[in-house]
Image (cartoon, rainbow, N blue to C red; front, side, top):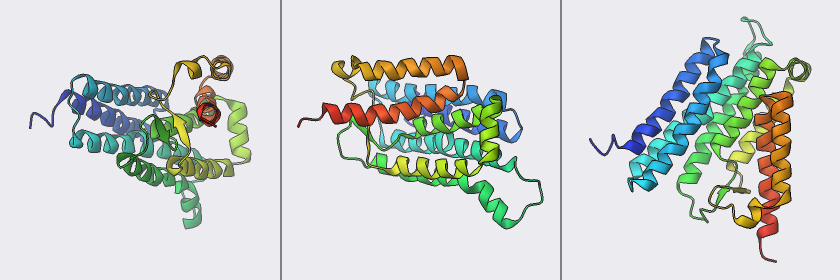
Length: 238
């Protein structure tokens, strides 16, 4: 009983609560508060692993609990955000085909589950993520959603081409289960941290944050993917 309520597990439950609360806020139209619950999930997701290592309290139950929490916070929650986005283009009385069109982003939830299961049995180097990690994917998706809420020009683009959300759903699903090596905090070395490309990308993110606000979330993940591919390729021995 006590081991179930260890500090790392309690922090993981904090992640799960924030994710579940965020979904509740989505369905109540409180989009202004979802950003804060999502950031809470990210903080708890970082702290549970940090606490497990520092307190030497890693356990198989903790690993499984972490995946369950991530599935809700970083799989289901961003999927629902995009479902709400697409549903805004249809009235309440829609055909079954329109309903399927609306719920298509739930595909990301399914592929997040596959990604987390794959991650739990991963036996390759722990220095890299293989495929896009679920928090980063959620960060990308919610950046799109909040940009749609707050940026009129971005909303006009999505309104004119709502199929973009379908295409991004397919791209996100593929990246989640791909074998593309991605940078993690364990893989960054001094030479990579000093690489001008990394600082260029960070500068672009800061500029986008100032100019476009939430869209910087999406741009940051796109640049993270590009930086991972380029930096890891350059660091591999010939």
